[in-house]
Image 1 (cartoon, rainbow over the protein chains, first blue to last red):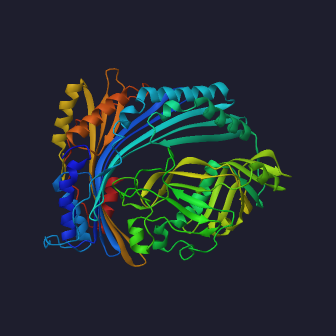
Image 2 (cartoon, each protein chain N blue to C red):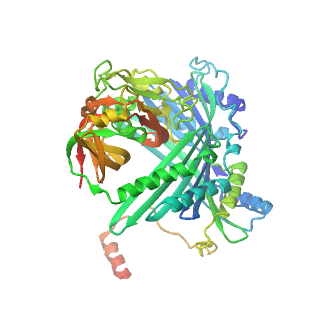
Image 3 (cartoon, one colour):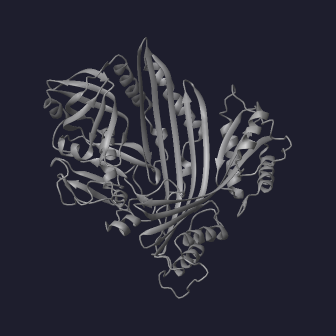
Length: 470
Length: 136
């Protein structure tokens, strides 16, 4: 079989789907994938790691009622794929020795929808290892030039190219090529007993020349300014207080604490408090939230999801009222929520699940300074760090760069702050949204592996939240 | 290269050797692994999703003419996939760390010792005591 995923696979895929449908499966899906990844790391003024890796494989999924069987394999020969399919069928109790040739569950594949037809040269247009390495060394060199007290300077780059072909017994037959690139700079600053560690990551999809367009000077300046500011920051005092969260990556809290609870996988597990709340007020009326896969160049955008469906713009919450959940094929089957083009997976080794794409709180009518002016004493979170979220929305997130707000003005930088809360309690307290919505690239790990997403928001004000400190 | 019963190590070696000769690569080695897993996801007492995977992969190391090492991995064990991996490792070797150059493992060409170890040894208190005595 040809190495390129194309119409040449149609006969083999129809044979497989016919076999699965003939055995009695409600639905059979085949996901074929090829990937080409490279990661490069620069430390100080040297390239210290270059990691190319490649993969090819298939994931075959069979549904029977509310259950499904999933088998992945690297063997893309007809024998290998048939063996994997038979294993998936046998898992669900189908007898592959009693196939019915007159079954009408499968009527052939539709014409191929090729989203990748204009993307075939993307991989060859990406930077070479040499040019990628040069750009990273420009980054670490710029950090050295403008930074102060820097002990460690790092630059990293990763490029993920993926070709997929999806075929299912409902006729779905679609191909796509995806390209994700991300670049990051990070530093560790130290002066006596004072320390600060700051990193920033930038990412894009579908832009082969993205690394060459990267503004090294701006990125390095942002990292160095933050590291310098936080180097001698005092520890924050813990307590309950109003908080203003900056735009872009501040949206990670909505993504983690609320977005995951609006995936149909959470309804299936019985872990979302919002399962029966469609049409109900679950957030402050100032909050409208969206998940979509359409924004040009955004890390979570896609031409089709991993089940062959084109993405939509899904309004999750409008004026505080829950509108709908994001759903995949299994989610629709098990919960009744219609698919939204959100079936996503890390690779062929994972079954697709309902996952977020570009998820953000929509812009509001205010200016960022209006939010700050409304706070007598509180915390401004300019950059968020890592965090964790419980299965039903309890979260804690560290604040990488924070400032006290006193009498409506930013005063001194503070470190050691952690935001602690619960989605259901915090959503009604987001009382003001500014007009400066921006997205930020990120990675999301969940039931179907690690995928590319964006988070986003304008500046928002939370009336009251628990701030943990030293 | 991957068969129903696992990897065909000889075929992998022969293919890579042919490619290495063509590319002028004199030193290379490979590590290979295959696995066959299955799992079941149970939700409130019901089996919801049953999963299985058959995975084969190799890691290739290439030493270039300056002695620097490049490493790559792939799950594509077709001829085209092996070629891609070998050339990828060769390109990566250009960025190898001159201060940290690994060499072939001394075990790579050592004769394989006789392996006579039952997968499931029956635990026996008396032999267990004997073993600890002889080991001390």
